[in-house]
Length: 286
Length: 343
Image 1 (cartoon, rainbow over the protein chains, first blue to last red):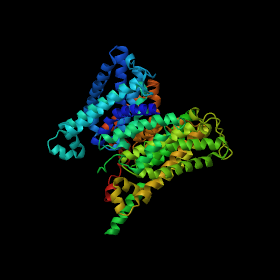
Image 2: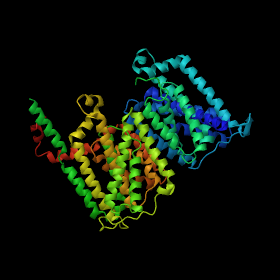
Image 3: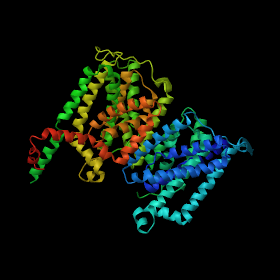
């Protein structure tokens, strides 16, 4: 029971790190980015290549996955995404689905369609018991890393100059621009960090979520659930939503294996009907 | 003065609803393929069904402005309904079974339309996606009924009207599909050119203002969503009947995305977009999968991105552009006719 809870929390933390970038793009730039999973997949594959083929240590692989994906993110943002910000939601959907299709086919071409695994150092494998609860070491690592990241993100958003600029740009782009905030640059940096986090999440999650070319399609819906259920106005909303989703999904699969993902989707629809702005949103104006 | 404006408006709207030479040529060409391209009927059947599916999406996207990422839900439900009706011989006559499949999908559309009405584009996107995922999971779980991942097998189709058997080369299937496409297209054409269709366009333009001039926004949207779901269901039913098979892939996100892509290639908001898009998509798919069998999705993705970056209006407008140019060629002898109408 507690093990399920623990696994669920680990899973939820992972989802949060994967999806928080999306919550920023959606909430901040009002941009529907269905290709977010592609960045996560990129991070996962970069780690696989670095750790398995080049023989780098696992942690170095994670760090590099973050920076490499952030670099990909900023390049794409400056070259392609920037043209699509002002377009309609339909255009954004089409554009990002196109990106997903391309990334799926490209990864299939380069890495093959089989599932990939990251070699995890022996020290991180196995379980140990805490008061009779089986705690996976790797999952513990995930919780620690993701927990630290969450605290750091919250700190950056709430207590730094960049964070306040970002929040200003979220609330009202035009006024923020009028106050001399370089909104474009703020967006670009945020997008890069969001993509980087997705890449890191993908690298960390390769072990739990599995990594194959259809990753972006398979998990797109989960990211979107986190963001829509959690709301886009704060970082705590998506965080709580992803923890709930993680626990719900793990427990659902354990207790009602026949129902599968059915429960999650139904809950999502109900929540969206009940509170279209998200479960934890403070009556957002837009 | 108002009467003058009234007649001008009426004339304009009537001229929009009139059949142009291109429409007539299009349908003559479509029916001519029955005799001209007998070897291609299997592919053409599929293309026509894709066209009908994209047409159903055009009804909500092009006319009412609802973005849906889950339209395959209705397509798949229609397909399973038609397949099950035939398999268990509940309704033997294919055309009546097809109408039933459409009605079942429309019922689902009606039930879910209330969910779609709420919220912004993103919420709609998520809800439509969620509905299709729930349908997918249900079809997967009730494997006794639907065959699960193996698909619905053992479907045998009775002859149409008790006379025309489905043959191996797909000749009957093609004629059957084409007749359905034509009938449904004409119906859709009638609907979108009616006051109801115009009110939908008004809602798409600005929902708040249209409610201010007395359009019941929500009910209109419910109506068109239900209709569109029924169309998608019939398209799915046609596929199940002509292939005597229904599978989970008919409910998948990829299906919905493909339909969206087809519609975008052809252009939204004038009904022919779906049909033309299906034709182009099919040719493209054939060409690309000859070129790179497994990776043709890459090029499809590239195409999508290119369409968005260049601008959908410009791409979707190419049909108008061609039509205008050709019409210009024909009109040359009497250039003053347009000026006389005095816009």
